[in-house]
Image 1 (tube, rainbow, N blue to C red):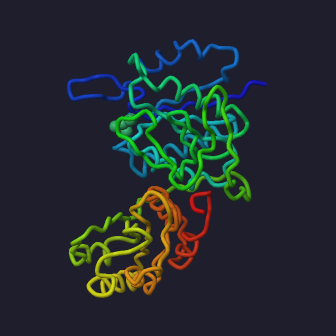
Image 2: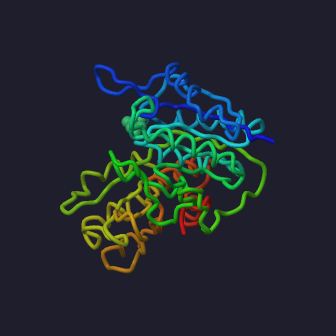
Length: 335
Ligand code: ASP
């Protein structure tokens, strides 16, 4: 029997048209264009239904409420459909894919994000292959998690990050192999699987928790961040140098980190290097972070670390439970 795929259009370049101010998302015209593609009436194409978001968004406008809306939409069609394809702007696609990978607990059906660098109505659009391949992969029975299909590769969503503002291979998965490389056929690679679902599908909505991402740089004056780290934010993803190193670890920063820790702010350390992992305590320059029991972000992407913090805080867990779970692999997001 043919699979039924729910195609959700949230906005992004794939469906955009020119306006006086630059590209903007378009609704009805785009759907007409989609339905007119010969592939959509090919006998091997899966059955599909379409859901169009209103308003359509440039993904730079996506917020926690939009992730919740997407989660609710998928949950409402979960029983009726075999898989989901989400058309989404590339700018924050890796954030949304990471968020949904946590939000959709015990997911067993494919949720494949895709989009394009060139709008579908333009002659050289990359949207056509991205969309059609994503639909076929969603109907393949071989994918059971949140992924991004882009530029000939299927990547685990919470391992992905946007690499290129204008290249056709816009995403990489720096610490995890592609799940599929697309050639004449889809080549499924053997990758470590994510932990298996442990119960029935469930939606965990996110709360708009005050979180932050701070990227350290030579000369950073941490005292300028003291207030937000100790009073305003509940969690901080600290993008450190190399394997978890920070400037002033032995001196200026220590009391601020200690204060943040005492205040209950969770500090997750990840590396500014896309490849490799954090290893707190391997250098003296990261020892302060170890002393205040900052979370070792391992090889998680910033997108995944942030989404995981939203998820765990939204579950109402205690600080120590959150810290413990941040260092565990919940959805294949860390090695
Ligand atoms: N600004 C666009 C967006 O993220 C870029 C894209 O779709 O590629 O919605």
